[in-house]
Length: 334
Image (cartoon, rainbow, N blue to C red; front, side):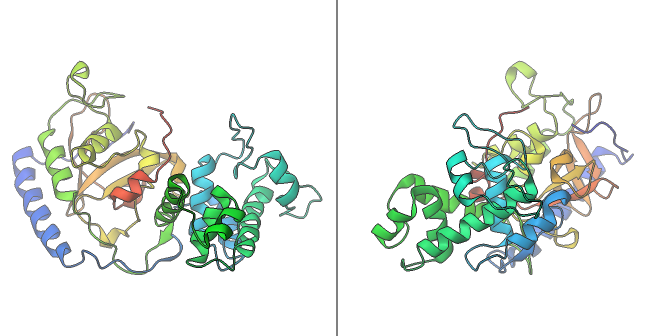
């Protein structure tokens, strides 16, 4: 939810015409970029909470089978950056080590003489070290070294060796795809990223909701009178084109790669945060329509409307992909 917004005074009819032209013009220009995605390296700005960025950047280059973005994807998938996370299966800390594995593979990353599973300065280096150990175990297997490492993480090194590559287990194959896809949302693009095929239809859905009153927790159900909050609107817009986003705005952030401000295209999700160095502090999301404007459900007492995106709390954007949305963990929070 957005608690404060400065609204423009432009008439709705004029804005519909203006944005219609912006969407058509910008989307048409973007058509030539479809499929023109470039290989990405490093971490995207704001993709990793600032408290952990240097650790992920450093330890994500420990061996060729991993990268900072891949390590970030694993940590996010495991715990959502929560250093106190604990699962019903007794997995602990940000990297979700079970005690037996921690005893074998935990490292003293910060050199304080302790191996503390709850300390990110130990957990993050340990996750990277464990990945690289697995990569060594399966280095003789055929295929992609990173995929084999991830398969070993999920199914065990023995199975990767047995099948000479990623084993034919649906769970393992899905895990490999999930982490490699999610990694793209942490990479810093070195060139244009592919435009979304579903973006125009998602915008069309949101346009039909203009003038609808905001509702905290609203997801557009009949019982709610078809009303939305910010992330409820973006979730519903992409649901209309067959893409299932998480309910919470800061979880929607990782549904695809992050184009820069100058590379925004209609349909991109645009995000706003309390702390521009921490994507977990995102508190608002809208759908970009071109020309510096978005459609959004701003706050209680307002209606779904057009607003400018260039405000001090703008943290960045996400180009939603179907695979990217499928790779996201689901928090279940409202």
